[in-house]
Figure 1 (cartoon, helix red, strand yellow):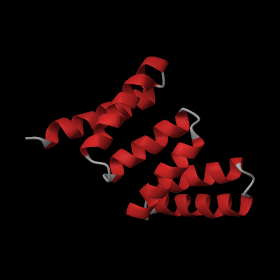
Figure 2 (cartoon, rainbow, N blue to C red):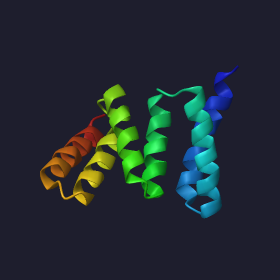
Figure 3 (cartoon, rainbow, N blue to C red):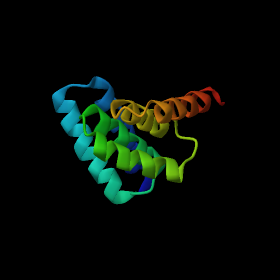
Figure 4 (spheres, rainbow, N blue to C red):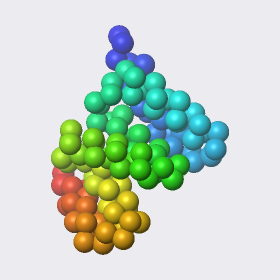
Length: 110
């Protein structure tokens, strides 16, 4: 019974992020913090935190969460895409290419 509200919060966070308005971004931020408290190593929650941090321009925070995400789930396209973008922004083109290639390969896998 305790699992259903958690799943609902994950779904609601995805919807809020997709809408992209400032109010929805604030709502998503609160939901993600609640989810992180409940399940700090859940890769779905970490995926949402990486996305939220990137959307908010918090690249250092996003890198930290993306590194945690890929350490827990080596098959996370979101984690590798974020790491690729951050590497590119920091002028680390070779690293960015490797991260992006990994993300693309993972995205294509069934």
